[in-house]
Image (cartoon, rainbow, N blue to C red):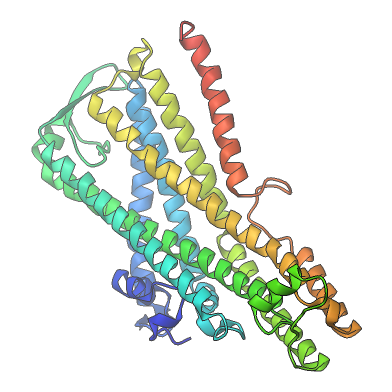
Length: 428
């Protein structure tokens, strides 16, 4: 694939090159003993930071069980760190397959790119805009997060240890329990801050890589499916305007293409082959990212429930949930990002599913009434092929990732919070 012309891909190639994602995926990049050097370095650093982060988070959950707000913060940190490690391993293990799947972002992937280039341009603009917004948001959030730890470095967090004693630590990025006394931690604060910043920076890279790839693939698949729909819909008409005219005029004022039935048959066959190619890439993308995406959805759902649980319990009289206002704000600051990622996953894949289903209507909207039996059989074959491919991102046979699941999740969360609130706050 030639990615030198970034204007002919539904892919933010400039961003991929500036963030190192391009070098990470490119099989022709610098190698060490036949392996991509960028993948080796990123894997070693991220796994080392990830394993240490999980160990420290789990130890913090145990050591500070008397401060449940802080323990909950460590709890969801350990879950999200696990997801980051897993998503990075998936990206490294299937990097060559991911590179091959990126061909779906090319303008020339289907045979009708010149006829409907405006569709490709529109989806390219959306892809570039969204991936830039995601990357800038992550970077600004990290800068604000790191900067606030330095500004508030003299803020003291009082925590009750597992043995009942009380310790006072200076506020830091993550405030990991690093097996150090409070005196050592506070006196070497800036070294601790640097260690925690380096660890979170690796996870920031993993987040950007995974989310940029996810958004790019979702928008590219949706774009190519829309190209297929537009191509099927125009078969037998000189233009879409003639197509709409023929739907309105029932007296037969249809302007058919001057092509012969054989040419229409060839056109249908070419579009059907493009359709198969798009569905093949979509199936390959699902095979690579399905488990990671479902894992992410489960982790984010659990994190959101835990955050709301912590919010409700902060109003209770239970001393274990009494914590500093700064820790509480820190925990609740994760709510917007969590909601956005849950909504984004459901919206993007729901959009793919809707676009796939619309291909049936596009086939029916073609001028099939003026075609011979051979073309009509090919249209029926294309419909059966589209209906036969039921691969979607779903937990079970009926639980599909889309906006309906997103709103059902909110309904279940509402019921859960009400059930939790009633015994704790009967007067509410």
